[in-house]
Image 1 (cartoon, one colour):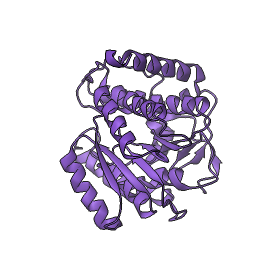
Image 2: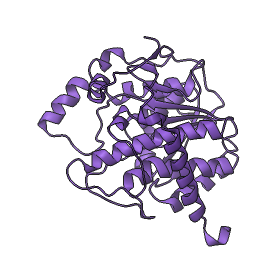
Image 3: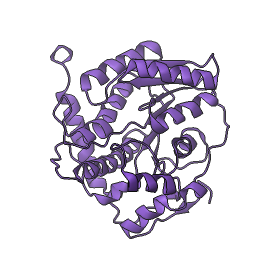
Length: 317
C-alpha cells in the first residue's frame, strides 16, 4: 500500500493495536532519498534519543540544517559528533539547551533559536515521556501532559510569535495507543501499574487534538500527524524477559520507525492535516473516534492558551 492510499483501521481497539505490531517490519514504508532539503532548517525535539536521532540523521542526509534541543548538552555533543561522522563534516547541527518539562527552559530555548536563525522550515515534535511513577513538571502539571503536549505547545507558540514559522511544515508524533483513552488534561492523577501508560495514552490523544486545531487556526502551516510504528525503545523503562521477546519479535527499530515521520517531513502530495500511519498509510478515522472530537480539541487548545497567558513573566506583561 502506498503512503498516499487511504485506509480505515479495525473498529475494535485491541484489534487495531495488535495490527500496529503484527507485520509492521514487512509493511513499514521507507522514505525516498529525494527531494533534497538543502538550505532548509529543521528543529527536532527528542533528537538525541531513539527515533529522534534517526529523524535528524535522515534530514541531514537530505541536506537540511538541524537544530537539536537537548536537556543534556554533553549527550547532545556526542550525538552531534555521531551525526556529523555519518552525514559529513560540514553538516550544520546546532544544539540548544532545553527541558520540555520546564516552561522557563522552553522560553529561553525559543529565544536562543531566534538568535541563531530567522526561520524554521520544518518542526518535528517527536519528544515524549512515559513515566513509571507519578510526577509533576516544575509548573505543577502531570508530567506526560507537561512534556508531550504542553511543552510542545508552548515551544511552538513561542516560535510562531517570534515569526520563526511563517509557512513551516509541522510533524506531530502520536500513536494509535491514544485510542485507549478519551480525554487529555494537565491534572490527571494516576496510580497503579497501568497509570503511567494511561497518562501517556492521554497525551497522545492530546497531540492529535492540538495538531487538528493547529491546522485549523494556522492555515499558513502544513501539519501532519504521525504514528511512526510500535518501536523498540526504552520508553517507559527496561522490559522484562517477556517484554524483551515481544520487542524482538514484533517491534521495529528506531531507523525504520523514523521513516514515516521522514515521509511527512519531506514528501509532496500529502494531505494537510492528515494522519499518516506506518501500517495503514493515510488513516480514515471512524466517525466516533476520540481523535475526531472537535469540541474536545477546541477546549484543550483554549486551556493551553490560558496556561500560556498565565505563564508570562511579570516583567514581560
